Length: 232
Image (cartoon, rainbow, N blue to C red):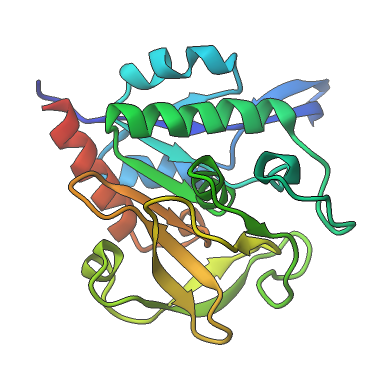
């Protein structure tokens, strides 16, 4: 089958979004995500929250999946008490995206998780999260940057073999790794887990930073390439 691979990208679900003279509930996504998919050679399809039981049907129509960043994962999803600094829950999005991740893993559809998406991948495989850490976010409304180092021998290290400065905005991180995952990159400053992956032939990768806010296409090229093989 020819043609560009179809990459599903999960979205926010927000109440009372204003544009022009309208104020309505909206499924939305920062444009950096779909533009990055397009620049890397894929076609982006936005996936607003839906019934979790439909996730497998949705994933069956995709060649690849990108789980976008967003609000904190509900600590109840990984059996923890809520820290006062953890943000409000997004139950519809948690349920839908966890179902999407599970369906992609089951169907062996290439998967990239970004920030919250990496955390959801870890939680979906039984891992836990650090609910608060300092020094990994910029000021409100602006991304920070810090260097991350690849772990030798990982797929991520093959894609990005050097230390890179990445756009970042998060206050949570991976704690206990989910089943089958390995650490693929760490923050240079404090060793925080910045990327995880599942070894094997399938692309299953999560990064804690925001590639959609930068210009490095290597991660998206890897997703699109793997998705093109799925399509073929």
